[in-house]
Image (cartoon, rainbow, N blue to C red; front, side, top):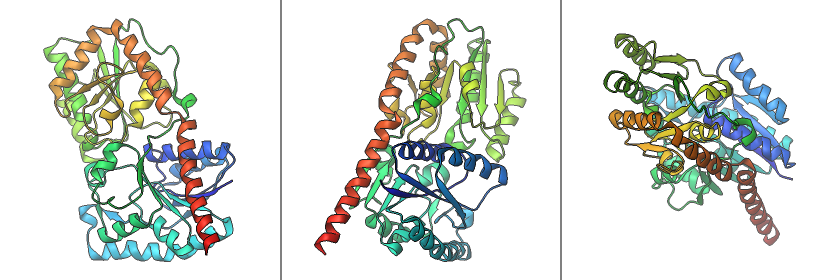
Length: 394
């Protein structure tokens, strides 16, 4: 069995970390040995949430002080970039000791934000797998500390995995000459699937949009589409739930807009919750308004929860939703088109049962954790068999 070290990029339990946990759980079930490096960051409550899950899975982990190798514009200064580089350099020696004591076979980095995984790989002569889940600039306004270093690191990586064709496309220049493939994320289906959650005759249509509250996620599209339905289409039996942590300027702007336009009785903002089953069961429609979604974990979860999904016709969302078959697509950024799609779904509700059924079957077939873990394992075994043959030749 393989001994795999995962380099995590965050302690927050958003999409990328949750996808990694699902993978780790299945790999552990298959008999592989899992080890995690976790960045020393955040508050104790966040750490405990993550470690509680890892303890249940049965993986070995440790917290270490290492930094991303990307920055926002305000963190561009030479001093800050040098600080991140120096911090990682110091941490590499400690990481090396763990790799040796844990007898690691493969190092797997879970995000493009961190360069330290490939640096460790080169230092300890272990193969490296790199998961690319995000568009740095498009999703988070992030920039490389050292683009050339990244390019060299990607070239030295044995296998790069992109979570969608969209992600592979936006990084195509950086990925030239590398070993890259697209593998959609897998889910522990049983953790997200809801049976008989379709409400045949809802008195109020509950619409939900989940995810970190930031401009790229497009929550304002949802708010303005609901406003159009209320004020211009006379649809009053609706409520929108915006689920996510609201602690930034964009979130405050949304709150202010809701209050100024007297939408409080139709729209509520709910703090991010790890378990969304109760909210999903109460929901009828799920929105994915992100302008640059890498794949759309929330989209798949919504399909499994029997919510009708309406998503922006761009990025990874357009790879999952087949318009009029397993959900609906609207022109990204066009709130009038979104409101029209919502209106048609609500006023033709009985017809949505077929859409919901198609979506659920599609998600179960294409995003199950067993197939996903099998594909990842094939990559590991291929890399290790090649390494074994090379060692014999030497």
